[in-house]
Image (cartoon, rainbow, N blue to C red; front, side, top):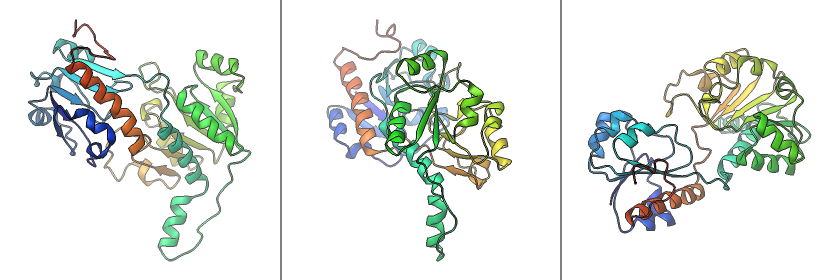
Length: 322
């Protein structure tokens, strides 16, 4: 098959063990992001299969309607960036392994890294010593502090394990069903939503973005957080009501460490999340490790080979195949 891989910005995949799975295919790798669907369609006009790097490119009708040769989109995990009706209308099969039993340990580790970097002022201290100065402030210890995990899922439970290892107290908040599962597992669930935000030294978000969860974190939630508390978001920016995080941070009352943004790639250097001193921003690198890529794209390439063998797996819209 003619396989086109989008958004491999650092040409990483061809150097990973999993890339050998595409040996029988004609592979083109695009290392430049192209947001314009008309121009992108020109690039991938011959593609029979598209490989997606998570949600880096939106796949809508304005692209799909221009790709008559496309038969398969292969990716991993959730697909809010893919227009499913347009895929089905154009006869394009979406295959996506939902990896129900495998958390992203890379994302969990990134959450811990952001917490540590924020509490110990690591970026500021590095900048200070590189500028010829010495210590630039006094950090805070994590042991004994309360980590509030919002969302009782796989990544959050991995983060809880790390927190427990360094002596933090963990409390939870989630959907009604998530809170019930947490209680059944013997976990500490906050007595109320307001208490969760008000008594957590650190609040970390671990919820999938879908229509029911968009904007689930409100201005009231952030206002309930204690002074100097930290909000960490390695999930999706859309979980927070538009503008409310920036407004709360501008007051200087709380801190944030964010790996996700409303617009990605974010190149607007005037964005408050990049300019406010009480924010630690990183460019959506929670899942960006060689190990995680090899795990994810091994599944993605298996889906391509299964399709080429006329036995597709992890079909999202199987009616296309039928």
